[in-house]
Length: 493
Image 1 (cartoon, one colour):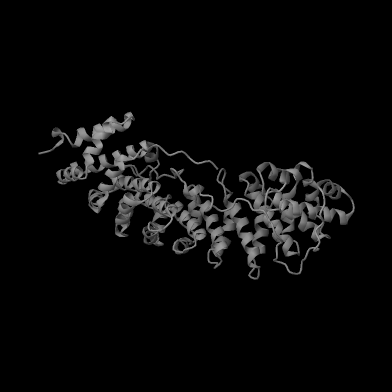
Image 2 (spheres, helix red, strand yellow):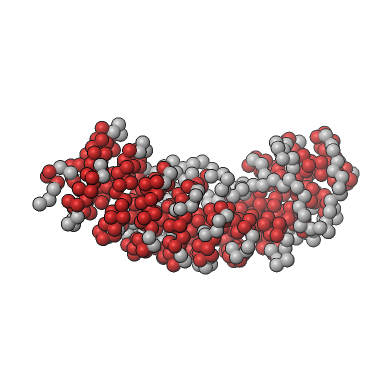
C-alpha cells in the first residue's frame, strides 16, 4: 500500500469536522497526512503468513514422520500420478519445499502446474493426511504474490477449503482456516469470495470454549483479514456476523488474540460514520480504552488506532469515546517512549480538537494543553507536525476564552520556533494558525498584550524573515500578518 501524499493545508482544512462556524462541514475522514505509523511494518498486522512448522492443535492426528526428499521432477510426476502413496509423498515433499524459511519456490510450484492437483487432493476425505499436506502447500502458495494467490483461487480452492472447516480432524480445519486467511488477506476481491463461500459461519462454529489457543489465534487472525480493506468494504451483513464474536474476543487474555481483534476493529472503523457506528454500538469502547494502557505494543497500537478512527466520526461517536475515557489516556500516551505512539495519540487528539466547543472544553479539562505544548517544543518533527494540526483544529472552532487558554498555556513559543521549519506546507499552516490567533485578539482587549508577546518571542522577526521565502504563498501569508497586525495602522487606539 503506497504512502498518501501530505495534504495541502487548505485541503486538510476542508476535511475538518468544523471549519470556522460552519458546522455543516464534516470533520476529516482523513486519508491521514504523513501516516508513517500506519506503514510501520514492524507494527502492522501481517497480511499473509506462511506455515513453517507442523500445527500441533490435534495430538491425535499425526502425519508420518518420514518426509520424502524428492527432486522437482519426481514431485511433479508423483503429484500427477495415480499411486496414492506416491501422491502423498510428492505432496509432502512439495509442502516441505514451500515451507523452507528462505526463498521458498512458490513460483516454481505454480509454474509446474501443480495447484489444480493439490486442490483436488483437498476433497480426498478418506486420506486426511493428504488433505493436510495439500492444504498446507496451498496455504504457503497463497502467502505469496497476488498472481500466486490467484492461481490457488482459480483452481477452485476456496470452496474446498471452506468444506474442510468441517473436517473431523482439527489440524486439517486449522490449516484450511489459515489458507483462507491468506487468500482473504490478498485484497477485497478474494476476501469477498471467501465471504460469499460462507466461510464466516464455519469459522465462528470452530471457536468453541475448549479450542486450543494456537487454533483460536489462527481463527482470530483469519477473521481480521475478512475485516480488512475498504475498496470496497466487507458487506455489512458479513461485519454483523463477525462483530459479536470480535466483541467477545476483545475480553480474551491472550495478547496475540487481542492484537488481531483490535486490528480487525481498526479496519472496520477506518471509514464512513455508518461503519464506525456498527462497532461503537457493540459497547467495545471502554475495553479499547483499557487496552490503550497496556505495555504490549502489539495490543496498544491497534487499540489506539481504533479509537483514533472512532473520533473521526460524528460528534455523538466522539462523545462516546470521551465518555469511555479516551481523554484520560491520550495525554499519557504523549509520554510514550515510542514517537510513533505519540504521533498516533496526537492524531486522535487533533480530531477531538476538530469538534464542537464542548469537546474542546473537555480536551482542556483533561489537562492536554501542557502535553500539547511539550510535544510542540520537544517532540520529534513528525509528532510536532501532528501537534500543529491539533492546534489548527483547536483554534478553528474554539471560543475566544478557549483560544486564550491555549495561548496562555505557552503554545506561541513553540509555534514561533517551528517557523524555521523547511516544510512549506507546515509553514503555511503555522502562519494560518498565528493569523487566526491574532485576529481573535483583535476583537478583544488582548490585542496589544499578544502583539508584545509575539515580539518578545521573536515571532515578528521570524515572520519578517519569511517575506523572502522562495515560496510565494509563504511570503504572501507573512506579509498579510505583518500588514494586518504589526504595522502602525494596524494598532487600534
